[in-house]
Amino acid sequence: MTDRHELIAAVEEDIEQLMTDHLAKRPTWYAHDLIQWENGRNYHDEPWDESQCTISPEVREALILNLLTEDNLPYYHYAIAHQFGADSAIGRWTRRWTAEEGQHSIVIRDYLMISRNCDPVALEDDRIATISKGWDSPWTDPLDIFVYTSAQELATRVSHRNTGLKADDEVAYEVMKRVAADENYHYIFYKGIVTAMLEHDPSACILSMKKVYENFNMPGTVVPKYRRRAVLAARAEIYDIRIHAEKIISPVLREWKIDTLEGLSPEAEQAREDLLAMPGKLVERAEKLERKAASKAG
Image (cartoon, rainbow, N blue to C red; front, side, top):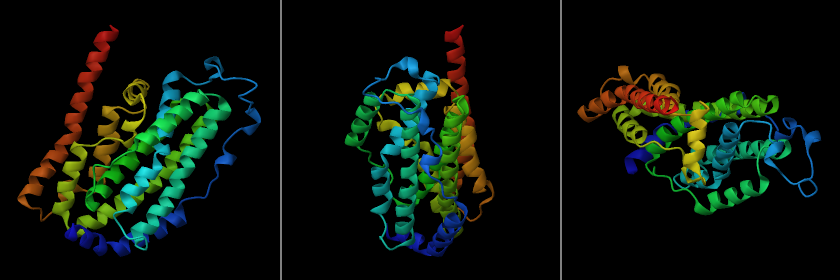
């Protein structure tokens, strides 16, 4: 890993500038300002019933999946923080990023509880189960970590934003718009680190992208009933393979201009070809699934 940490050291000033820019641009916001507290009721005196829900089952499950994924934040913090010194630029960033990410679970849970769009007992049971199971990041190479977080933050932004759009609820829309905007700031930060690294070692970056994006999974896979919840989110057009191809993989590759990079090793040249073909192959998979679903529906 020595060469990787040397690469991190080479972009230390870039990381410092990215953090300065982030702190200057990201607006301060508070969860309590977004919630209609006047609609709150006592769960002891008025137990929850599904008839009280005001948004569709698909969007409710997407919100819960998003929330439980955010709840697992301690594991994401550790996956990054233990790789770098506490006083390094990344060490300082990771603490700030964790503080901001913590707001997301606070505001989504506040919304669900006040609006009664979830079973509070089931939600808490799933939270305990999720955190008890934990999450082990498959990425230990520092370069892989930043390549992964770039795409993962963008994917989270898209998922949160689409959940709010599909909710047909003004408060849910505002909550998820705010959270999605935060995820976009985080995406810009991590994308910026990889951009800086590409200037120093483009071949290593391309090889990392191929490895990470061919084996990409969201961290929410440890959430109870993940597959069912993901299927419902796909049916609601919140997040599916086509969205992953067109709104995540294609944009990150385009942002880094990998099609015009020069000076690549032969292995990296082949990896670049594979990367450029990846969105199309994902869309083919999506079309196959869509035809299968249409056939069943017919």
